[in-house]
Length: 518
Image 1 (tube, rainbow, N blue to C red):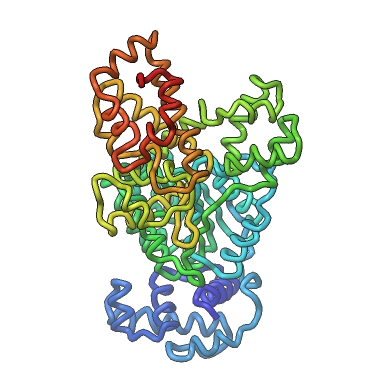
Image 2: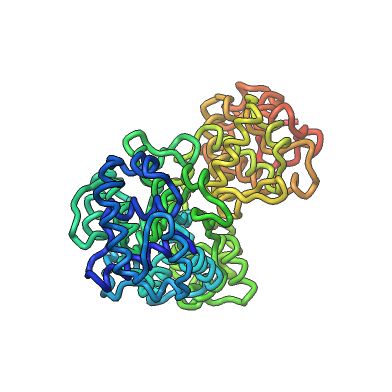
């Protein structure tokens, strides 16, 4: 029997007999006895004096339990007696009307798919009694909708449910001033972490905290808090490490450091990285009345990684620009625009300089890439430790995928980063600068032919077209490029470590674009 089950049994018994639950000091005594701690150790952990625990409250508490349970109870036999109670935990839940504050939780009356994820999270929360769960994934992937649906399905399993968003970055004191009164049923107004923990031990609560990324630090490795919000990390560590009968569900675009440190496959702290749902995507596409074959719908969903938000944005554009024809949209081959770009901008801007470098390199590789290959391509060179730290951080941010020690981006992320790369190259070349150009080769020398063809089609050709379109006439472009030799242009555009553009392609593309004369 777990401690939380034993506490529920005791609370049920005292509530049935005396119409009250255990007080804070009684919970401390009970927890210490359950773990076979000495009174000295209980006093050290709880902050109460040993004399008060052993000579004053202790005898009264054991008598209270003896009367409530109908057995002679003391510090040494409490665990043995309670383990004889076989009914399930639900039999000992207080018969009290549950209270729910849905806060900013969304409407889930139209919800599709996610059967496997709901089953997993239900198992973790109800059967495995997880105390802290992080639900992480890219922006727009459907984390909040899944959490809202799950909370609605499990509402009869909890005494109290409260949903709060951290989108506007409330201070910890502000958040606790809302949580503590609610989970204590207005009996307590002390906005302190230990008071929240006490009431999470007393009642079976579900606390959902959405948009955790709003208090995490941008421009550095993922998972660490902004300076003014470091105390949130202390709170979540406390709630993850301490025994209680409640569940905290964190929703975030990034996994936080304390979750990564505490999580265990079979432990009380776990995380679920959310991917797109094909069932939900198909239902959304059909509800918008788009026209296309099953294969076209599958292709559209796959490109956006079955992200509900991205698909909502793009289906509106398909309706207005392509009369709802999926095939016409796919043929246009322009899939990152408007809201989708802004969504990815928000996440890309949070990256550190090294993380952005890794993302650019992965976009150039366009396939599963090993760590050694990435390290060889990064200019200026970085340490292996720094690269590993950045890859872990990007994984926490759900911007890259890992398989057998290799890494790659999702299609929509790759197209977005590719566009950023081209725009950076264009800006530098027009300004006759070369720091960015020299750091990233658009075409690599040592790479498979089909990847090289892809780099030429998706990186080099769009760059040359945009370069040509940046000038009102080709003569102005030639004059600008005349300040640099063709060799310099090649080295800046393609990089010294890359394919010899002119010799391999016989300057065909340069001639077509009239970038140089031979």
